[in-house]
Image (cartoon, helix red, strand yellow):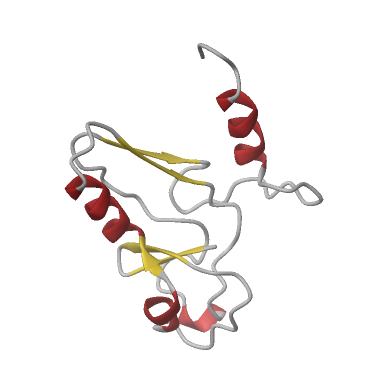
Length: 115
C-alpha cells in the first residue's frame, strides 16, 4: 500500500486502520529513505519497483494530495525507480489475481532468459 504526503511517498502495510494523516509516518516507510539506503550501499545499480495499484488508505479528509497513487520521485544517480502507472494514478489491481497487473507481467518477464 502507498500514500503520498507532503511531497513524500510512503510504503504502508495493509490491515492497519489509519485514522489520521500522520499515521503514515508512524506505520509507513518513506520511499525516499529506501532510495537513500540503496544509494549508500555502494551498488552500481539500484532498482526500486513500485506497483501502485491501491488507493491511499487515509480518511478522505486527511489526504493532502489527490489521495490516489504515488507522487513523482527523483531517482539518485545509479538508481532506477519503476512505477506501474503515472504519478497520482493507480494501476490495475487485477482483482482475483495474486498480484497487481503490472507485477503479474513483470514476474513473467523476469523469468525470460536473456531478456
